[in-house]
Amino acid sequence: MLIVGAGIAGLMAATDLRQAGCSVRVVDKGRGVGGRLATRRLGEATFDHGAQCLDLEGSPASEARWLEWLERLGPTRVPWWPSGAAAAGGTDACRWRGAPSMSAVAKHLARDLEVHRETLIDALRTDDSGWIASVGGVDSFAADAVVLTPPVPQALAVLEAGRVPLPTRLRERLTSIDYDRCLTVMAVLEHPSRVPPPGSLAPASGPLAWISDNLAKGISAVPSVTLQATARFSLDHWDEDRTEVGRQLIEAASDWIGHDIREFQVHGWRYSRPRTPDPEPCLPLDTPFPLVLAGDAFGAGGLGGAAWSGCSAARGVLDRLANRRPDAGSGPKVQP
Ligand SMILES: Cc1cc2nc3c(=O)[nH]c(=O)nc-3n(C[C@H](O)[C@H](O)[C@H](O)COP(=O)(O)OP(=O)(O)OC[C@H]3O[C@@H](n4cnc5c(N)ncnc54)[C@H](O)[C@@H]3O)c2cc1C
Image (cartoon, rainbow, N blue to C red; front, side, top):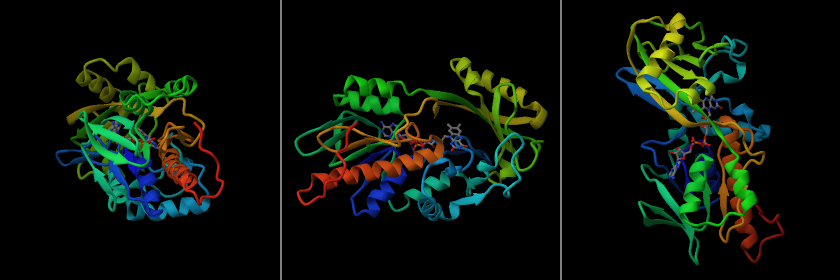
């Protein structure tokens, strides 16, 4: 089986399928695993520059499932702040972080999986025996089933390139899923910030949605902050010079971080969070061989929703394969 995308949805799907006895390969175009569970270094400074915290509670998982997920995350899930000590303007839901940083969670989930990094799937098509995924125009992976977890516009591009037919209503349903953008500044400071404990802040107004102090968070050896712009600011300033945009966001945060900035970088997340997620936890397609779309665009959104979506996709694939076997019971038919 082939899982496209090594974000939390893909890694959860791969883990469930492997536990069910399937042979699983995961591919990701990135240099590392995790997708939007991302950490970057700048000199001695470390930044979580995608998802800031592990609020998996947002998923509709049962309590038993939730406890099993905690086991899966192992020592990479640690409290950011004690229960009840919510961040100023934040919520108590965001009190777990990755250790030593967010990308460690993905590395931990991927540790026993066969993962092909820096591998961009450019098209997916079927032949008589199953799915063929191509990389750089060359047929590279054969699979009896596929779970596709990139952000929906990227997943659609892969399907279109392989001429996988999609009914008009389904295509419209998928193309209606839109994403907020997020311009993110990673700044190394000369001095510790004035962001109050526990080291995160959600400003009530202005261009910033979130400020994280990575030193206070416990992931950076030197003072550094991650500044995340609002969706509105990110859209309005997306095509502008990134250094100039970074300066504006640093100025907006100056009450908390001062003006002594050693260096900074700006990252633009084109697909930050789905604005209009599909209500279903995943989307099995009516294709000759199992193909399920998953990720945070389906279900509850966020890390919890993406994790739940990946697990739902694994179950969808297993149900579909079981129904194909002659001795299978009469499980539900999988329809888009
Ligand atoms: C700035 C920011 C802050 C956030 N903060 C929070 C937060 O605090 N709490 C929270 O719950 N959520 C947060 N989120 C959202 C959360 O990060 C996502 O909902 C979640 O990580 C999505 O996981 P996913 O597996 O669905 O997708 P992704 O993590 O995006 O994984 C998809 C993977 O597919 C790969 N891929 C794409 N196309 C291809 C291709 N053609 N071939 C191969 N690989 C491909 C990508 O490289 C990527 O690794 C935040 C997101 C951002 C960007």
